[in-house]
Length: 86
Image 1 (cartoon, helix red, strand yellow):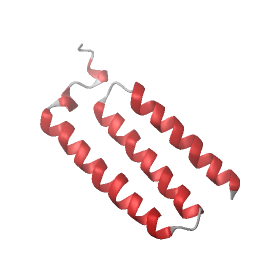
Image 2: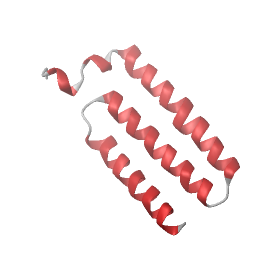
Image 3: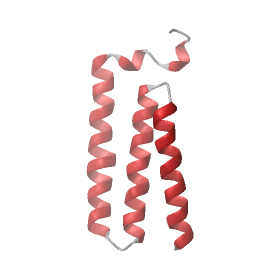
């Protein structure tokens, strides 16, 4: 079980660093959701299923959708890093 917690922490740290360094806003939103899902896995492994379910539903699910809709509504999804524009 300890190696699963360590793996989840490594995934969470990697996704948090990706959130800072990604140029695409939608990819950064996805990375934030990965951080929340990894935290939900840690809570589940620590035998706190109620907290894990709340973290997965609210932080990863609802917040991820709201952030993605906000990025789309503001038009920032068009300024993606892959289009070659600055």
